[in-house]
Length: 110
Length: 112
Image 1: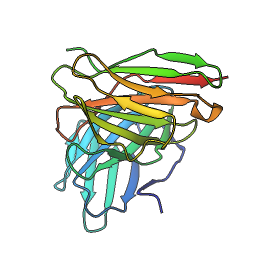
Image 2: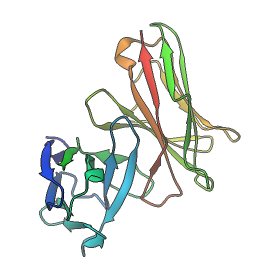
Image 3: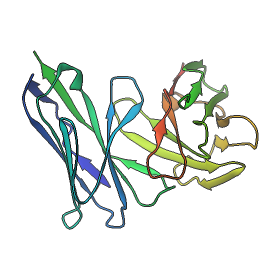
Image 4: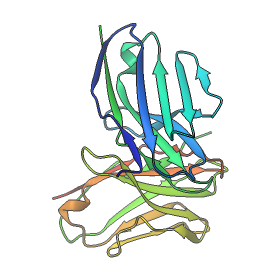
């Protein structure tokens, strides 16, 4: 079993749609959780950290369920520029390595 | 504040040659991580370094790969006697010991 599992997609959605991605992780000792975004042939860029209380940044909302070891990302009002691969990432401790999911590919179409 | 810098951005080597990849962390960051992304795969951790120390090299292949982060200068990932399977994107990330890590643009290594 992979340490961080994601549906690879692709998710093909029209502009303006709401789309949700899910992720599960296997290490119950994981302490920090993130969503990164990676454009084709570019580096991963931090989209947002994920907290137990849930957090929102504009059109993006992230949720964490520690009991179920489950992380989600919701994107509202999708834009063409949201097309990318979204990486679910966990970290056992600050200063430790990041463990990446395989990514979920999103394609937003006009 | 400049971000994480990596060079070269593209590197072509023939089988058996050596590859040297360099990474300069963000100002104020003393923690450097190297990750490898094989074609069509996710990022995999290789090594975690602080100045003059290797903290965790559990992701490094046992042979041909080495890394350093000297007191002065960039971190170096060195691959000796490269093989075709080493062709990948190599990303460096830095952190100030906060959980978040910030990535450089990567070095794309092609082995002919």
